[in-house]
Length: 119
Image 1 (cartoon, rainbow, N blue to C red):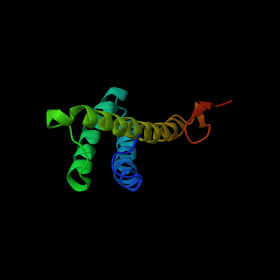
Image 2: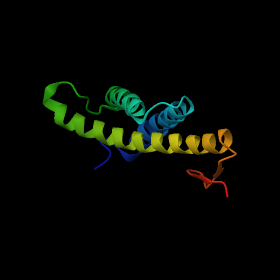
Image 3: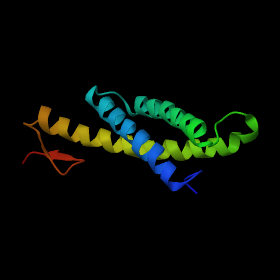
Image 4: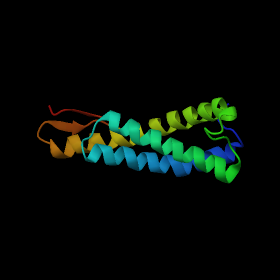
């Protein structure tokens, strides 16, 4: 199961709050030409913050106490995977625009997520 409390709570916290933040984080790492590893680090921290929101506002599990660590870690992983996918989309879309704009003499845009050599 990908949600812990309810689907509505998961969509609101992870989808809207976390997803929007992950999208902006992906865009930011693309704009400063940083590595994927830096993006993953930011998303790991964001997933931890979202796990705390699930815990504090909706009585979800957190990574502490250790008696509920396994459940909390599972849902942390779910949040991390969802947020990483959204951040990767934001990063790739921004990078495609960058490549087509900054290297317009070499590349042209090929859809929202790609670029190709100019003929």
